Length: 168
Image (cartoon, rainbow, N blue to C red):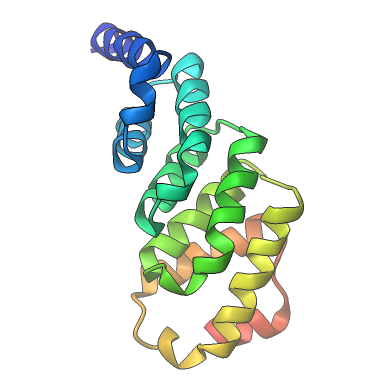
C-alpha cells in the first residue's frame, strides 16, 4: 500500500531529522533504505535524510551495511554523489573484509547509478587489484556473485580483458 509506505517515510524523516538520528545505527539505515528499495517506493526526501544520517556515522558501518545501502540506492536509481564517495572511502581499506555477495552488491549499487568520482574509481581499481591477488578464492564464489560483479565492472566501464579472463 503506497500510503502506508509514505506514512513510514514521513515518520522516519521526522526521527532522522531530530537529534535522535545520532542514536540510529548503521544497520537501521541500511535496512530502512533496503525496505523502500524492495518495495520500489520512491521517496527522495527519505533517501536524502538516510544519506545525510549515514554520512554522519559512516565510521560505524560494516561491509554488509555498506553493501546494502549502496545497493538500495542503486536499485532506486537514486544518485547521491557525496554518499557514494563516502561509502567508497570507507570501503577502500576494508575491501578484503567483504563477502562475495556484499562486494558484488556494493559495486552493483555504484554501477547502477553511474557513480563517479575519485574515491569511486579508486574503489573499482582496488577491487580489481584484490581480485587479481586473490584469484584462488574466486573458484569458491557462487556464480551469481561473479556475474553481478562482472555486471558492475562492465556497467561502470571499469573492466579489461585481464579481469574478464580472471573471472571467466
